[in-house]
Amino acid sequence: QVQLVESGGGLVQPGGSLRLSCGFFGSGFAIYNIYWYLQRPGNQREWVGYINAGGGTDYADSVKGRFTISRDIPKNTVYLQMNSLQPEDTAVYFCSAINTRTRNQEWGQGTQVTVSA
Image 1 (tube, rainbow, N blue to C red):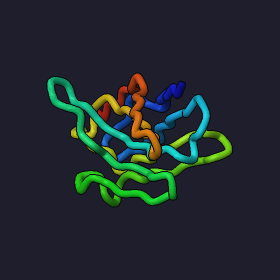
Image 2 (spheres, rainbow, N blue to C red; image 1 turned 45 degrees about the vertical axis):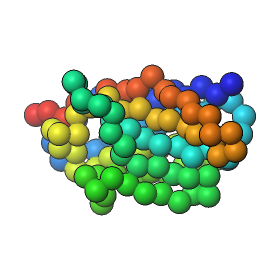
Image 3 (spheres, rainbow, N blue to C red; image 1 turned 90 degrees about the vertical axis):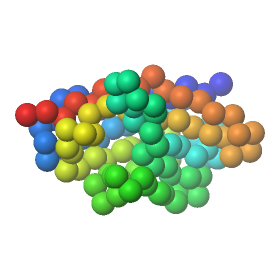
């Protein structure tokens, strides 16, 4: 059983930065692809980016050059570094893990990010 716990959200001014963490609790961290999504009020969840089991990353066009995903394998943690934040980045951010062997998918509970002056 895998559990994901996001943390690091909060209130930040436009132009500021935040780093979100996704703690992975369970076994097999190295064989999971980890995804970040955001969900604005009243909208569907949107893909932000991922880091795959091999360490490769990709990002949505809206965050390319501003957001960076990394991982610390000994700590079973994936990070979402968000720079140059804008009000439109305000959302609940979720991480999700997909087992590359079974394709099982797990979700975290989300963490709120609010960008406002």
